[in-house]
Length: 330
Image 1 (cartoon, rainbow, N blue to C red):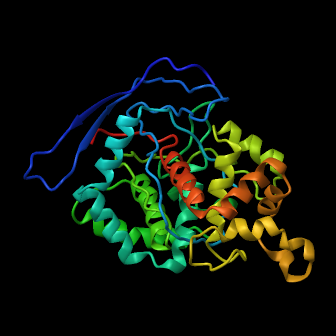
Image 2 (cartoon, rainbow, N blue to C red; image 1 turned 120 degrees about the vertical axis):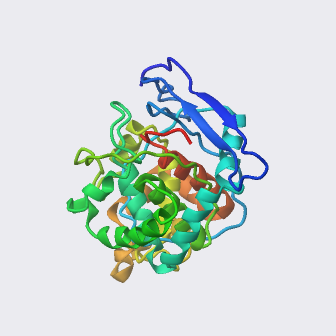
């Protein structure tokens, strides 16, 4: 990655006391900005209008779950910003913002626990097209043009669910697909008992599909997966944390409608080695991670400490839904 040439400037403009909206953020970003070196734990994604860094809040005791998140998708990263900007962005998303609340309310009306995994998979497949070397793809709503691709089989249903929420929101105000999908994934996590993940709004939708072939196959081995994620600016730790979303759904990792650390507890035991039906648990990529020493060390930590998993997933998810995003001023 290239070295950083400039930083984003942030203007925070509080609303008048009578306004129902919370803080609004105005972002100004140069046409080109650069990422930090691959050796660091924070990474950059070019955005001509805005950027938003991950929140630093802790997750606490939450639970959640998953369905077949075929998420062997590559996921990206974000330029590190200072803590004060992070905290302001979190407050802007979570405090009393009427727009944000409207999105969450409409999503809660249409997303049942049984469909949470599919909605979360939709997030991964939209944002997972991001490529750091040319800043292509990412969280831009282009998934609506990509549903006929083989890797997106099964995503028409989740998108149809979100269309209902979008109609409800747009009866009052416009909303981009990128914002709606990003918030929907966070709400799916929370609905199933996982951490509350605040999401900044203001993403612009792409008018064209992202390049094909950007989501790695679920048959990749651990080394190939780690290399793929490294190109996206993600560490092995972030790879493992994000893959923990596979605890949702019908792949054999505990209750399919509860988001918790069952994925890691079962993965650490490597039940497929006992043969029989246990061999059907998880995707090939899940089993590959458990055979890699570096990945297994994180699997063990998350199996032992659910709060740590939730904290790391929250941070990684926030990075994910800001990857490659183009922003408007709020």
